Length: 409
Image (cartoon, rainbow, N blue to C red):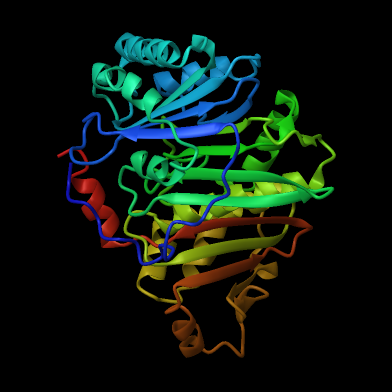
């Protein structure tokens, strides 16, 4: 596989200090699935009674691991559970052989941790179409089970990386009646990023007590405004997986009315989603696209994604060119209702165009100076109604080509 890309200029200074979530332990190892000299398998062991919710890609060519996880979500039981993840090979488009690999890995993990196979959730990420050498993974399970630690979440985040340039983590501590509930999550994702969801793996853990159905409702709702509102390159992966585990170890019960918990979970999910965009392959700019005044929220989202996914818009951003005509183009092609003569466009605080023409006070030199910033906001108002949406993307540079032109070599 090609050379390791340099650290994203949008990367955080360091991996964050995450709260320790009681009832979850991590272990990683070098299995040599595709990479050498680095950990490429992660195991997370979860306490008995853990509730698990999830969201997955809607690709028609979903991987064997995704299909297996989808079948298991909702089968809540009293036993413990586990997440087992490998990087380097997606085990996608591998037919019956891929299904057999998932079965072999699941069986080995269940045996090593004394769990039912229905409580083992696996994920694979990396190259598509190559058989997974699952024996390299199953051979590590006893070692992984013996080295589990509640403090190994950062190594876990590193082990699931592919073209990522930095490990991604986010967390928060919430207080309910003087007692603490913790949420911590990790993610990987850099390219093939677009709803539904991304070539993205996300694992979030909390020690709250939550019924599985309540947790699933929360996760599905929050996914719509977090992970399904990011895009790097408009490509939807075969392997997208978001799993959220509630161990219950804190003893603090959360219900559908727990607004504070849902907001805390939203913040963690959005933080991880933003980190994925900040690590977009070749990215140098983090861009928020805000759309208001659409006929509906759904139309606003359609317009926002049309702008965020436009190669012409993204390359203009990379070149620090305030080419607002490309915004007009993207709105016009989106397929959602728009009216040229009610359209307004801003770059940051700079009003660029309104009422179907460039604003008389617009000074392109101001916009050109604004476009030099690493973090940008593009705002569009359609002037048609009350629909709104916000999505996040990055620029499109030659670095994206460099990474993907030799991904399999």
